[in-house]
Amino acid sequence: MGAMRILLVEDDEAIRDLVTGVLEGAGYEVSTAADGQAALDMLPVVAPHAMVVDINMPGMDGLALLNAVRRDPTFAEIPALMLTAQTSPEDIRRSMNLGAADFIGKPFEARVLLRRLERMVRSAS
Image (cartoon, rainbow, N blue to C red; front, side, top):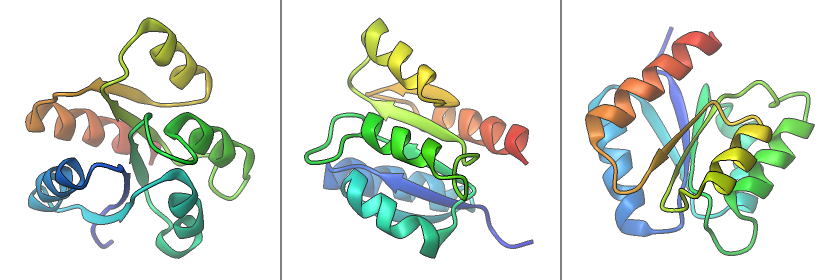
């Protein structure tokens, strides 16, 4: 089997580059989208094993993206890790209610992100 494919959805270019570097360094194959709509368009092409999603993005935010993905039988089972500065209990509750597998606040530690992503991908497979 090839590398695990991750779809990273993040509107901040610096954070997108940072997370991409961390994930690729750990052996993941990373595709990126700058907003929820771009991510939805990419799903059939990338067929990711997991998604790392920011909540606060212009246009379709991370929660709307998660909601749309969960409604599509083809992609509903893809685990999503929410990586966001929006860490209020309400944001966490809404993410989990929409089927997020995990939630990490920004700023984050690379090793924590990798450990939780690995656990999420392993439990989904």
